[in-house]
Length: 194
Picture 1 (cartoon, one colour):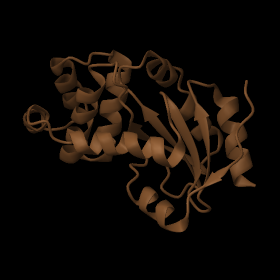
Picture 2 (cartoon, helix red, strand yellow; picture 1 turned 60 degrees about the vertical axis):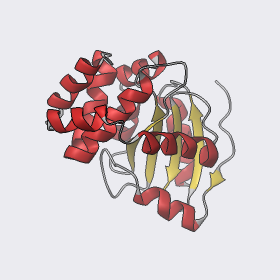
Picture 3 (cartoon, helix red, strand yellow; picture 1 turned 120 degrees about the horizontal axis):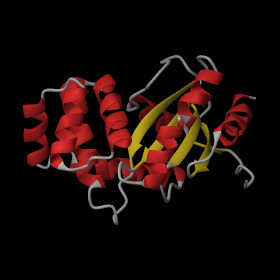
């Protein structure tokens, strides 16, 4: 394993803006958030999700750590961008819990066809016809691009899964690249909690 990089830091304005746009999957009061920049078509992202690494880490830190999901569709994965747009359509229709359910369904079932995306929207209790209209209209393409650009410019994410461990109080953060095990996240978290 490679050594964790030195902590970087967002200034107060960037931190406030970034945190205000998070879709937290867990404790809203946690000091640390793991931001997973992910691609639904990426086999490493699918494996990372299947292994439950992030949930294991969140559970271990019992309220001090939470997680969130952001899109980072790689250009050579042709189904990743449409799938990310579908996830945003689900979020717009049914909120954060539906968004998280949709992402889990897609990463588990790996069916990124339009029918698969709509089936995942149904599992997430979203209005399937509203999601389909949103998807067919190409809505949220800018949102997906913005999330990817944010990962690149704020945190240096270059591939998936790109995990940013962020202290939401100090703005300090560490990048944990790839589908690493719990130890890599725990080391970054412990350093940011000092």
